Image 1: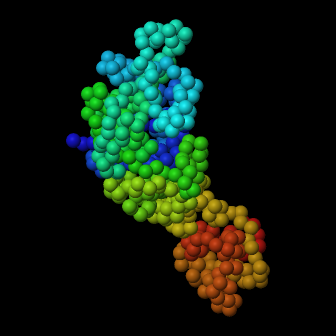
Image 2 (image 1 turned 60 degrees about the horizontal axis):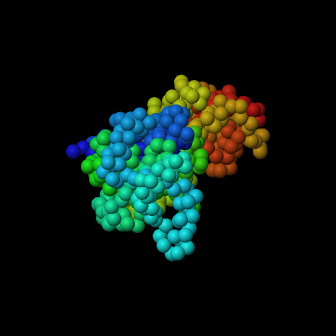
Image 3 (image 1 turned 45 degrees about the vertical axis):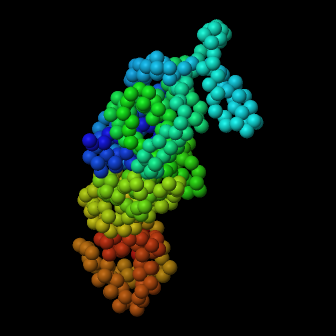
Length: 447
C-alpha cells in the first residue's frame, strides 16, 4: 500500500529551518515511495493561531517545492475529537482530575525532595463521587487525563531501530484542558487514524509522545502507523531552533536570496550519511534521502554553509531560468543572456547580479593611477560592434603600445573600467559596457 504521511505545523509563527526538516523528510518519503503528503494545520490554539501564519506555511512549503495532496485544519474537526474523548471516557481510559497547576507543582517538588520521580500519583482516581461534587461546587472544572497501562511500549522505528518506553515511568497525560480544549496528543491520534496516515515521520523530541499515542491508538481500536524519529537541527553552536530565530525562518532565508534547493539540501542532508550537496529539485533530493541513514546525533545547521551551496546552484543556472528575476532587478532583457553568462560565475545569489549591472551601465567612478596609460588605452579602443574577442584584441594592442603585461597591464584596465580590483572576466563584460562608457571611464569620467 502506498504510504500516506503528514506534516502538522501549528500556525502560530513562521516556519524556520528546523520545521523544514520534518516537512521535507515527509514530502521526500512520499515522493520516493509514490505515496501521498498531507498538510494538517494544528490550529486548536485559537489564541495564537492566525490566518496570516497559515497562509505563510503554504507559501513557504511552495517555495521549497512541496505541494500537499491534501490540506486539513484541526479547527474544522472538533466533533471527531469530542467523539473520541467520549469513547475513552466510556472505556474508563479518560478520567477527570481537579488539581490546580500550583497544587501539582507543590506535589512535584515534594516528590523530588524525597528522591521520587515526579510522576502524577493518580490521586484523582481515588476521589469519591461526593468529593468530585464538592470540588465542582467550589467552581473547579476538571482537566482530563488518559490512564496509561503499565509496562513497556515497543515499536520498530525507521530511524532509531527497536524502541521501547516504560509507560510506568510516565505521568498520565492531560488530553483535555479545563475549558474543554484539546492538547496536541489526542487530536493528532484521531487525525492520523481518520486520514489513514501510515507513517509518522517527526523529530526525536516526540519519542515519549509516541509511547503515549500508541496506547491511545490501541484504546480507540485504530491501526498503529509506522514511526520514524529523526534527529533535530540545531544552530552551529548547538542551540535549539525556535520561531524566535527570525533570520533562520524560511521567509528570512528566502529574503536573503538563498535558493530553495540549497536550503532543502542543507536542512535534510545535514546529520545524515549523505554529503551535503546542491540539488536541482526535490526529485533529486528524494533519491539521496534514506531514513535508515539518518544519524542519531544532533544535526548542526551552519547557515554559513548555505553560501557555497547557493553559489554552486547559481553558477549552474541558465539565462532562461533566471530571466524573470533579472528583469525584476532592472536588467535589460535584450542583453540579459550575455550579461548572465558574463557574471554568473561571480555570484553567490542571483540578486548579486544587480551590482554587476550597475558596473555595466554605470555610473562608475574609475580608479586611475596613471592617466597617461589610461588615455593611451582609450585611444586604442577599436570601433564597435564588440564581441567576446574584443577584449583580447584590444589588450594585445595596449600591451604592444605600452610594454606592460600581466597584472601591470590588466589591473589598471579593470580599475578604470569597473572601479573595482576584482570581478567577472572582462572579455564578457566589455561588450556590455560599450565603447562610449569604456572611453569615458578611461579618460577619468564617471560614466
